[in-house]
Length: 88
Image (tube, rainbow, N blue to C red; front, top):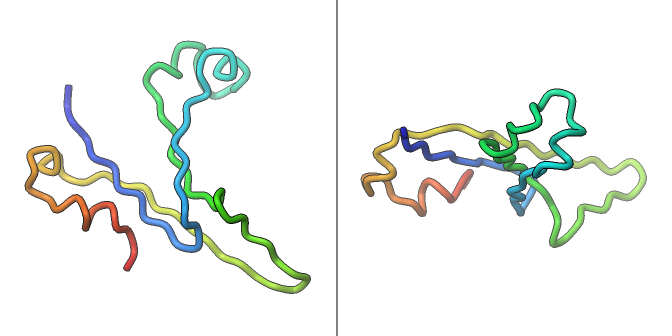
């Protein structure tokens, strides 16, 4: 099996949520096969600990970018602090 390392970069959202719909919810998703939940993982940026509350006419922007990096990360060639840090 090929090892992959995913990098989540985010702006405006301090938290990350990792989830899987599991068997019952997967069956309710039209674009996910009944058994596909066994090989999937969803990673989202979020503001769960401290929700973002806007007053009238205020704006907020957030974004996320999910990418993969070389599997050399798994062999310790990349600094995990730099990979996990996201945007500086």
